[in-house]
Length: 146
Image (tube, rainbow, N blue to C red; front, side, top):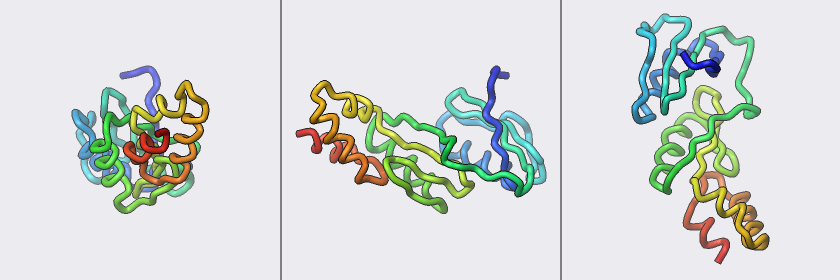
């Protein structure tokens, strides 16, 4: 087991959420054998393990903690955005909340390069463009610095 494992407290959807996340990510897997009445489940994607726990309605997720997905291209941005917003809600600047209340940031790798452009005017233009978006659009971000 890894030294630090994110522990996700759900009301009663831990197994459902774990199965959903495993269905989305390449090379993801359920670590524990589970049944639908399990109170906790361990799962993994991209080598990161998580524990999902059914703890009741005492605590809720907030955007103060989010999962950041570094995307290589627009196809990947679109894939994660579309599947994770289904039943959830879009937010600004590549952020969303999925149907289980988990906050995600779906971000193209190039964004960091654009926001740290050596020309501060171009960096600001990229920032201004990003602030106008919900789902991040690489073509529009690149266009903004032209």
